[in-house]
Image 1 (cartoon, one colour):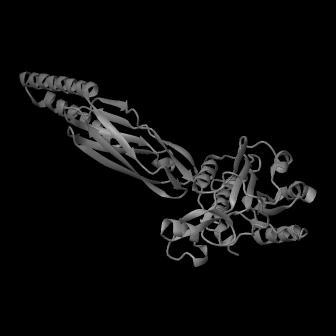
Image 2 (cartoon, helix red, strand yellow):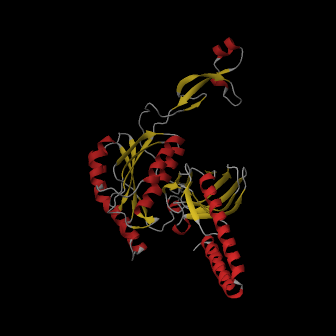
Image 3 (tube, rainbow, N blue to C red):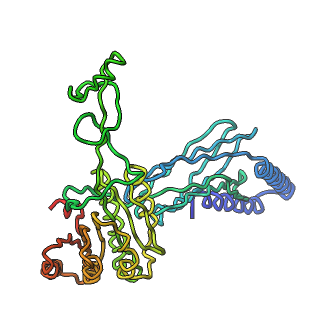
Amino acid sequence: MDRFSIKRLALVGVVFIFNGVLVLRTPVVFFRFLFWFFMVSVLIDAVGLAVTRYGMRVTVKRRHPGRVDEGDRIEIEIEIENTGAAPVFNTVIEDCISCAPEAQRIQRAEVDYLPSGYPMVVRWRCACEARGRYALGPCRLYYSDFFGLFTFSKILPDTESQIYVYPRIFRINKFPPMMKGTAPWFGIGASRSSGGDDEFFGVRDYRSGDPVKSIHWISTARRNKLIVREFQQQNFFRATILFNMSGESNLGEGRESVAEYIARIAASVSKHLLDNDIAVEVIAHTQEIVHIPSNKGAEHLEEILKFLTVAQPESNVSLAEIFREFMRFIPDDSNLIVIMLDRDWDVFLTYATAGRRNVSLVPLILLSSSFVTGYERKETLLRAKVKFAEHGDISPLVFSAGEDLERNFSA
């Protein structure tokens, strides 16, 4: 029971006790006077409440970040302003924060007095524990009479918004090198530099530090100022990240589940590759097949992270089916990164190495037994290393539940 309800019940109790004492201790004439005085007061109070209900003008604005990472604490600011002519009393503002822990999802603030024309700011703070796209609001306004006998509520329009809680990205200090390259294609950015043996791009004004050999003397003479040649440095490396978020294989619970590990690893690997100027493509199956074409840049990373934010383990197909359907679309002279369970190792060897195409393979393997109870880490890791060592030309990275992923990418 909140403070608002306790105040109302306490007031009603005091009124009844007071009237009981009056019946026993006061003359009939004086009691009648007090009774009618009380009834008139209640009537005036009810009229005032009706005027507040139908004449109140309150606007609410919510301010919050559009995205956070899982585990971060956020602050949501609510600005309440009374745009009507009369002040507002005994008001409670309620908001729904669906990304917060269950006990903190409903936030309330009491406003005893809200004058006309003056905004008031309240703030909610909570932790966003799980990735996902969450709805915020709508805001609801509760208001009552002075005695707390009557209460009404009103949903405020245009107070709904959403927030993305991205997978937590960890730093990758050491990652298998991308061994294969492919020719550049339209839409992939290129960095520019002056000098070198790359493709000629154009000319520009001289900047301090440009090598003398890059000066374009004909343009310099024509413009009467130093002009240098500009070249385009092409990066031919690209990588495809492939995974399957199967509902049947989603072992573990909460943040210690297979799907959550896949999302965090895929997000971190994508950022690492894009930061190193390697184009990234994503092929995944959640509830349906998702293909994010190869590209580079901050906007491309944002697109990948938004997909990983909402991806859920709802796939009903196997990794073998995904390989059969999409392996032929993986371009030659590229790198294939597969995030999978150890139980899919034989499937990976069957399909990923079929035809021995010029594709560099980087398997990232999650130990399925580590996501269930009774897990013996040392024994399981030893068996896995013996199993994977049979194929010396492929060196997978192995992860287990509860492990520090950042440390695993630093070994």
